[in-house]
Image 1 (cartoon, rainbow, N blue to C red):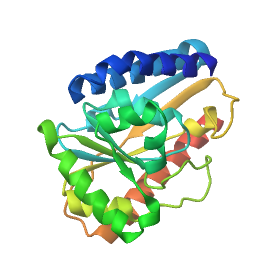
Image 2: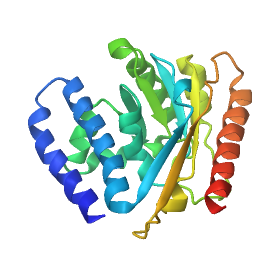
Image 3: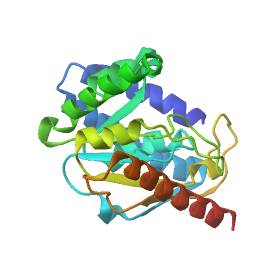
Length: 231
């Protein structure tokens, strides 16, 4: 954990120079950090990763719905996609240094206190970004916060509004990161985190049908991976 946070600070300090360059340079630095993070997990933490279904990631604009159990997947996703754009809570953008990179990468902060207005702003901002620079990947954690492995799901309908408004394929992702890197804990466990990248859900579904389907797929996948880790 010390190696992780010291190196994160080092990357951000180096990145201060990159902030004056075009957004692509900052994205490249962030993706480099994501790959370094996985290396550090393996070498210093004894945590490996197995990706299943990488062939299911199409090129171009995309909505990605990811199970959120740990801080681990936040960093992992940086190196997995070509031009990621995170939907994240606005408070993260106020963190010194870190927030500057959030804005430079043109991630989309959301103020959850705005209620229904926040969804309208979110969809407009995501639509603007998803079609920028040849097509970006919009990354969202549908539950909005980290959940312990096996906890009852609390999916928010915002992911369905995004799916309806963006009109692009949605790739669901299940994982079992919380088994090895529990939330709000410094006690890591050695092992292999499995990331299950499922076939894209094509645009055109009714938003209620999509909401039920994406939740079913992500939960079924994540629960199977948790059971696999326990075994």
